[in-house]
Image (tube, rainbow, N blue to C red; front, top):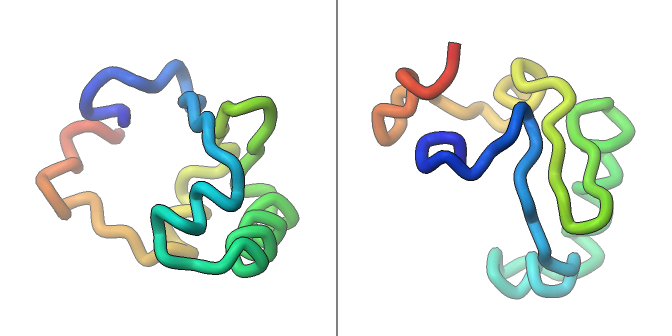
Length: 78
């Protein structure tokens, strides 16, 4: 979302319910809920009122095993 200008600071709009997110990802609502709880508990994200804030980008990258060279996104992040 940063690559297309849809982020302010570390926050973007994510107006989806956990059920909708699960449907979109092919996951159960229970799994989505537990995963979000884990991410919140680890201090990585805040999800409130249809907005997602990444509180610890480096930690989230580590947990997800994300590679910034995927889709050449390294230019979007310091």
